[in-house]
View 1 (cartoon, rainbow, N blue to C red):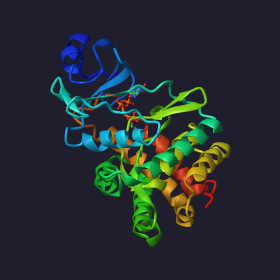
View 2: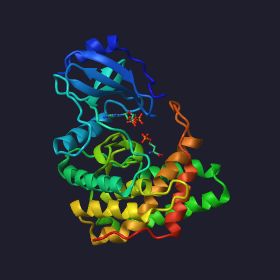
View 3: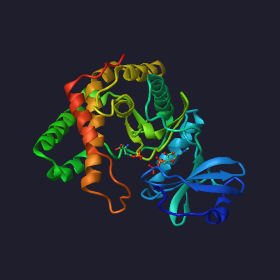
View 4: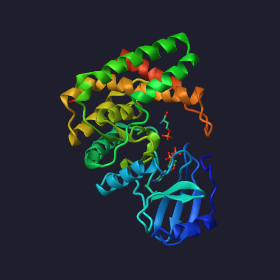
Length: 319
Ligand SMILES: Nc1ncnc2c1ncn2[C@@H]1O[C@H](COP(=O)(O)OP(=O)(O)O)[C@@H](O)[C@H]1O
Ligand SMILES: N[C@@H](CCOP(=O)(O)O)C(=O)O
């Protein structure tokens, strides 16, 4: 259940008058999701999604909402936030920040084939290029610095082999992030959490990326690695499916060619993408936030992926 703040049509009616959407006709809570309260909202002007943010503050939201607006204006398939009459994208509802965005058609593709991976790869490259002139900056808040804060907190909860892996990978990633080659990688706004459940498909047609609330500025290749580690993986073993990886990378490369530095950084970056989610899942399991709402995801899935990426080279990038 993912409606943490309950709102009814009567609460929304006076509030929605500030938006150019006409009257609210229906409001229905959305069951999935773990961070925010989401509702399908029907108004006289069409179908929207209303989100009440449970953990993010008014100060944090402009980066995410402005980024979505920027991308939507450049034809990237993302929900477009609707400004109110004063041009604000985020306004209080029940004392919490809230926003209305356009509703994407379709549903998540949880068993992707190469054709779906190609769609995601091409749209991700388009998104990276469209973000080049986005003026706001926020670092990836789940990047190397966060890993250094989280690792000592989770280490006491790990078995000896897990602790050895975590220490060794942190050491490896420190060296990778400090390298001249890493410093030359193209950076910009990235989604940073583009898992299967954060993309909509209508059949084989991608209709949008959503859930931008882990977005930040980081290397484009990190975004590619995070996405490939989810979309192209055999969920039971963590092994990459070559056909899906090739479809994804070829489609990305056709829109935004990979560089030679990215080719060199690819294997360590896949490990970085696995470490990031192993760590955050460990952290959520052992150090739950006070406002934690649902059962945390299984960390061993990403431990398996990390071990697999260390043991077996992934298909190479073209450059
Ligand atoms: N713009 C949108 N268009 C259509 N459905 C959406 C949109 N945004 C969210 N949803 C639906 O709401 C669900 C929860 O959204 P999500 O952003 O993943 O929540 P949370 O941030 O709480 O994890 C999604 O699985 C999707 O079904
Ligand atoms: N994708 C992350 C968790 C973030 O949850 P989301 O529903 O907001 O995408 C993970 O799998 O650990």
